Image (cartoon, rainbow, N blue to C red):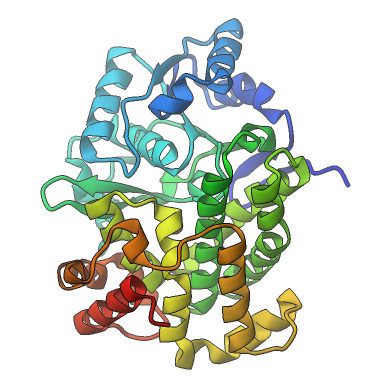
Length: 386
Ligand SMILES: [Fe+2]
């Protein structure tokens, strides 16, 4: 089967090996003459970015690169990007990279025409209505990892330096208008990044599937993406040059982010404060906490886990079968078992718990959570107590 397609759900997606060649056309069809390509400093040095810029320039576009951003991006990364956008008289953004670059690019495109500060648009109540939609720049998103799914997401996660909290900046129109998903761009990802980002995709699927909100459409997307992760993540980690595995993981990543319009849960609530305080990798942190959260939520998700086990073809259709599969998958692809191995210690549990509680993901955890619950859950994740 040829793994290629042009899809319009949840946005316009050009999927398939080699499709990056269509980047100049994608920019032009959104009216861009001078796109600002936003990426991270490591990617900026790689041929895939240089080639993309060259293609745009050869097509007559005034393309420049902005790469002053870090993993777990902070407000300043966005602010400086907005300055670069205005200084270069750009008219659109190519968000190119992993989650940090995609989120920063989307936030820059949001902010270039606003008068309010970034965190006025945090995803709380209906603050997104404050956005001057006419001031938003168009975005072409090009993911180079398979996990975040930010290319089909309507939000960016940016750390607020005032309280060191990761905040979700949301507007429905932050969904990139066009996405180019070229699995060849992910062939060079090292195994540990493949594993961690792939587990982020799985965490999106499993948390969305377990969210108590009614959204069968999202659940359908989530379970098929979990099947793809089950079949192909170990293959992609073992052999990064396997284009078929890379293709399936890339679309599974987009499916995970599509599904989590239904909500996330305590995996992300626990993970965000760790990322903000200890700069832990987002996907890796989710992967570490995943089994502990499943066990914690067991009473509320047992029936769903039976259905999932059946769909995934696990030996017996039970909660235990799903848990064992997650533990075995983690072990096989080299994910650590405890948060202690990522540098989080027991004495941090009490200070992280209040932030986990107020994380937007908490509201759709299958079980209601208290600060004390989060402290206990952190302790489990740190000590390895399942
Ligand atoms: Fe995530």
